[in-house]
Image (cartoon, rainbow, N blue to C red; front, side, top):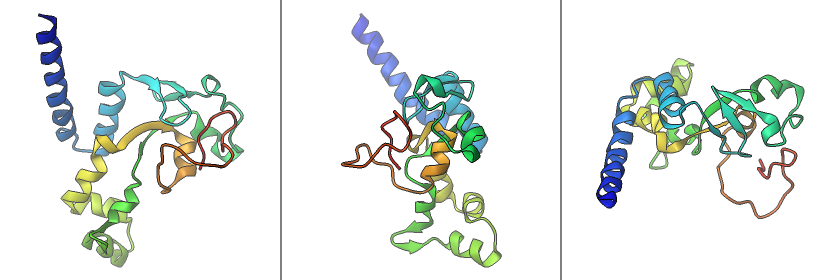
Amino acid sequence: MTLVRIFCVTVAFVFSVPAAMAGSATWNSTKNTIYKKIHNNQGQTIYCQCDWSNRRTNLSSCGLQSAFEKKYNKRSKRTEVEHLHPISWFYKKNKSWRACYIKAKELKTSARKYCKDNDPEYRKAYMDMVNLRVSVGSINAIRSNKPFVEKVRSGTPSFGSCKTRI
């Protein structure tokens, strides 16, 4: 009986996550889904495994209480939903610039906003929850559009006792 119950719960989860993803019409609703429905407003950040609750980071839980320059202090205290695969990398498709990116540059407007509003494929990638994680805000800022890697071969940690390197 318990195997049947486990199977049913697993199937329900597999089908509910894509349904939640499909229902995310805006960036704010996507973030809210991640924070509230997936993490129940608490958890650990992807980098340094800092505890967080209600979008606030507990920097002392991961040894980061004095790890940031003054300009990053405010942002370090909050969590942000970050793209593991930098969203700026999605401006290219098949090694060519997307039409929305070219048009945004012609209009001298934000390529991110323009592509999100005018390119359904880009928008889908932008909102894809598989590519999104909760992180310390200042680490998200410092990382910028650099690639995410699981393990770095060498180098000194960038943030005190945390093993994350940027």
